[in-house]
Image: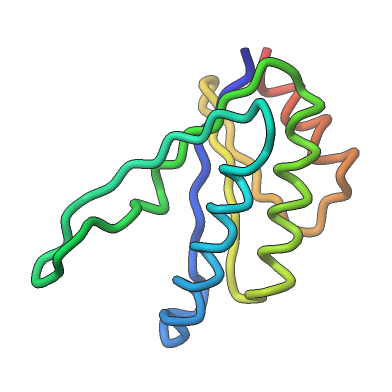
Length: 116
């Protein structure tokens, strides 16, 4: 089992509504990847009726490395929709990588190295 946590950061807080919309679409894409388990943490926001997703506590689990090719594609699609974001992966060994400016091959190799 390969697993790591993901954080989605907004680098331009004044664009919060656009960031939230893009992040929501990104999370939906992730949840539609076959054989990928996406665990979202939610909290109740004051003065709202519902819960909001905590974008620093997304847990991704898969049986094989190849499934993360779809995660990489979803991240690139997210960056295409919202340029001022950053997606960081954190592994059980404490290492983190930011998926920005990496090819799919480079990203998958880093995931493989850190998932041992």
